[in-house]
Figure 1 (spheres, rainbow, N blue to C red):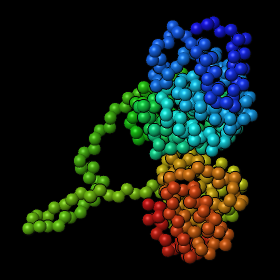
Figure 2: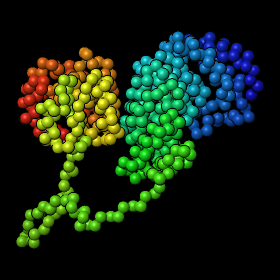
Figure 3: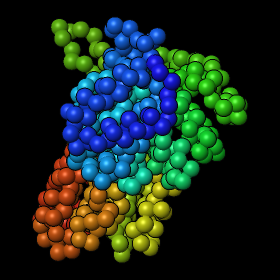
Figure 4: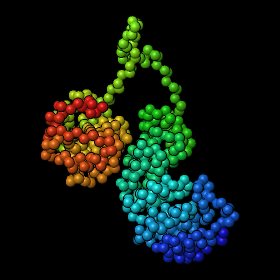
Length: 463
């Protein structure tokens, strides 16, 4: 490999950029340039990058950096041509060309229809750690900076409970955002990663350790609080074991803070058989052939935890409204708070009530239905079921709040055909796009659902 002459390298990269709009010619000259800088002392006949399935030219990083710098302006000004060139580079299948392709994706405007399909396809095709990291960081640069809400929606999809194979992508994608000193909206990130940390799959422990260290550096107190909260409340015995294994990678102050929580615990003493039968009811079995009476233990149905049911009242209503009081009679101990102010102010009042607890059943009426919808779409892991009563899911005037990702939380909507405040069909159209597991109950009633309330079996609906 010749010594790198920076002036010559800039001239070569500049000449290469002249073929930006001609992908095949670009590839021809790129191969010549990469060959020029090959380190033949490291190259073998079957040269494959370590831990990868990609061939490599063993090109020094400085060469790729110079090429990326020369292509930057052209890529930002001509996104369609940049995508065409990225596709050609990716198709070449070499480590260096894949890294250049990932870099080009990060230069185009964050248009989901162009960027995300390639990102999804390519991350599924490659196992090289450097290329994967580039796809989930460099390729998402503009989306992360220019459309952070859209970026977080993408990460939520990666971290969806039903998609454990994509969790690693979500954790990797979050690292640059957490490390960005200018980004301060960390609470949504804490909410997204909490269930993943609690699950603590063994295959993701390196990714989780890296994530926890990044969170600690960005917000030490909040990270300590989150980890202690998880360790104190989890029912998963593997959580503490996994975090104990990871703790050697933590900064010493964090490791010290968690030491008491990570100590191996004495296993609980098993209950005597007699006590265990307290959880059963006794049911007689039919007698046959004059056999003596016998009994069969049958497990009781689990009772619903009413303290995890919350009712969100409408815009001009209160916690003392008719529906709120009726629900409180049916489900004693449920939460029926008061909300005041704008939508944003009400959501700020709701967040500390729900906290980081899971298994909430949310009942939202009218404007409260909009609140319940937004919270559920943003925090699906905390909600077991969503019940909406004539919800105000109207594009006009609430369109800015309804730019949400589809969720699979079981959802029931009760809506009246005579509702003259929140029309049924526009709401149904929005709901069908937002909820993958939707039951729509149309009743012959008005907006307040007075008749339907008396007729419906709410215990069955909430079950």
